[in-house]
Picture (cartoon, rainbow, N blue to C red):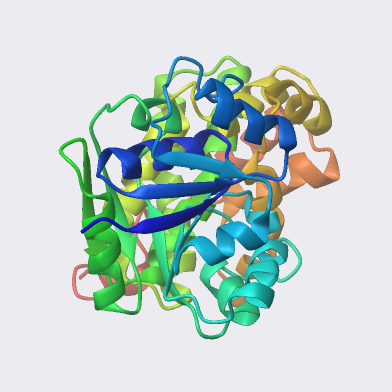
Length: 341
C-alpha cells in the first residue's frame, strides 16, 4: 500500500530515511528549516553537504513550510536534533492535533527536563502514538543500501508493526519491541559512551581500552534503564549493544569524532565546531548524569564524562579516576545471592 509520509528534517538521517521510504514505493514530503537545503533537494536531487553522491528519487519533495508538511500525511518521521523536538512537535500540534503515528529517529534526552523523546512528544501532542526507532545505523550507509537491522518500539503493537511494514526492505530489516523506555534510553546514552570512546582514541589508547569502556558502558546503560522500568534484555539487542558498537567504533559517528578531538586537547566547543554537526552526546550527558544521581544509580563513566564536558576535568585524569576506583564484582551483588556461597 502506497502511503504519504512526512519527514521532518533534511539532514543526513532525514534524507537517508526518505530515500529508503521512496524505494519502498511511498510518497515523501521532507521538511527543512533551511531554504538552501530545500532548494538543493528539490533541484539538485542530492543532499550534497551531508550525503554527496546519493540521488534522491522524484517521489521525494522538500518544503520549507511546516504546515504543508503537517497536512501532507498523518504519519510523521522525526529526524531532527533531540533538543529541537519539542518546538517542532508543538508546531505540528497547532496544525494537526491528532496525527496517527509519529516515528522518531531522534536519539537523546531533553536537556532541561531529562525526558525521553516519546515523553516530550506526548506532552506537546497528547493524542500521538509514538514509535521509537533505534539500532546500529549510520545514514551514510543506510542511504547507499548497505544492509542493517533496526528496532521499532512502541506501547502500541499495531503502530510498531505498521512502521515495521513501511520501513522493512531487503536492505533494512526491522524488528518490533514493546520496550520503548529501554530502546529510547539505549539510543540516547550510547552517545555519551561513544563520546568517551572517542576521547580514549584521542588520548592514544588502544582496542583493549575501548572494549573495556564499551562493556562497562552497556552495564551503566542497563543499570539506569532497569531503574527506569526498561527490560534488561533490550540492552543486549540492536538498540543496546548493537547501536553502542557502531557508534563507538565508526568514523561516521559524530560523537566519536568529537571525543577524539577532545582527547587530543581541543575544548568541547572547538570539537563541536570542527565536527560541524550536532553532537548529541554532549547534550545528553547532563540529563543522564542528573538522572543517575536522582535515582541513585552508579554510572562512573557518565560521571567522568560530565566532569570533562562541564567541569573542565582533564581527560587523562578522568581515566585515572575510573581505573583507580575501589575494587568490586563485575555483576550486581543482588544478582549473585544464589551463586556465592
